[in-house]
Image 1 (cartoon, rainbow, N blue to C red):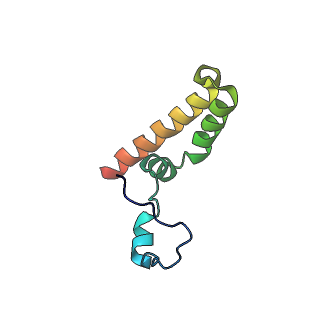
Image 2: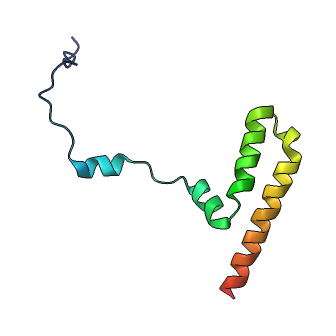
Amino acid sequence: MAAPMPNPHDRTRKPKPEAEHEEEEEEEDPIDKLVNASGCADQHFALLDCMAEKQDWRKCQEETKKFRLCMAEAQKKKQQEKR
């Protein structure tokens, strides 16, 4: 026999404390964090828009190239800063 379902109209349940709500908030996606830190967010979003519109990454070669070059430049700058 299954456990009884909680009454969805029962408002006596206590809301979660604020600290638990904060933990549930999503952290920034690691990819988004990397792209934003690189300064290539505009190229990244242009590529995502193209792929969403055309539904075929092969039709987005110009956007792919621009994003790739931007990320390569950002990586190069990052490596030079470490020296």
